[in-house]
Image (cartoon, rainbow, N blue to C red):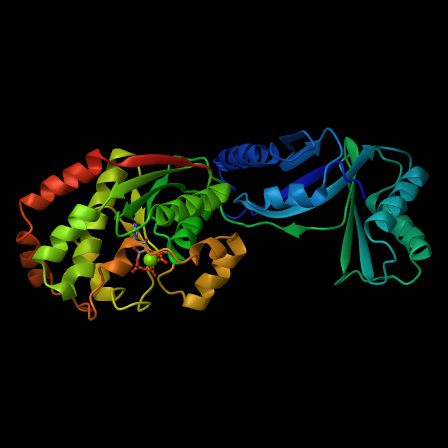
Length: 393
Ligand code: ATP
Ligand code: MG
């Protein structure tokens, strides 16, 4: 079946007001951006409250759908056959040709649902429904009509052109990107943080990312893995600027000076401080991490209280109540899992204590951190000065 266009459906909840056109324009430009990479020379445009992607040449349906399944804000994708408006008898023939082509040997139930924008068309929608229904029963004798719960809802639209479609392929949902909201994602090489970033991006928030690298304790390959993950997330979230911060000296200073059961929490607090600095410098309004309550000893509610204490920006932890299996399922769905499980260590796994504190006491942690002063401030300044920026898309 060769389709001419795709009808892009979006969830309307929350976009009804006067800002709706912004939502639609963002969706149009994201859809156009992803379809540029697919043969078909698509033109994406709005028309009468609809968004269409019209192909100028034949295209592979699967490729185009896959591209649109990377765009947040799309609830469904309908492959569309379009032609010039013709008279009623011709319309019935064309409808049958469409249906038998799109659903060969169909034996389930269907319902025809015609709409007319053009009220001067000789038949009204009921008549179109009836006549096309009768013709389909003859053309596909094993099928039957079910007006309440059909397997296939066959839409016929008489507009400036004639539209036929009968399939809605699910999209990702969410909100399209393109506004000014931006989050700074703490991106490690693990399973969780790419998923966390993806979830916030799904709400229309642009991402930047920061990775804390600890050479020689963490290898170049560990860094490359984070770059690869950023690219995989960028396929949905748009280009991601990755800030690579050399964290080794900071980590060693903490290791040398602080009680080892406090290493994880103090390291995490320095990561947050640096991430917040980068966020503010780069116009991000929130921090994002992949933490989930109780997943590891350092991810207790009290630890998160302690890390929140060192920053003023909100810290979003979209996975907070997810089970590990739920996170894995999502990472498989978005395609980051295989990369995440590659075996290169990230910096935290090397400097972890056997028994990290799980209920950090604010006073004790602050006193341990005071021992790092003033040297640590210079190390932080140096880490920021020597950051490496990698644009991932
Ligand atoms: P992930 O699977 O995302 O690595 P994790 O289960 O390994 O998470 P932790 O190591 O406790 O959990 O890290 C918690 C969060 O802190 C991560 O999800 C990430 O947001 C951030 N984080 C940890 N290590 C780094 C790092 N080296 N660079 C940037 N962010 C990090
Ligand atoms: Mg990790």
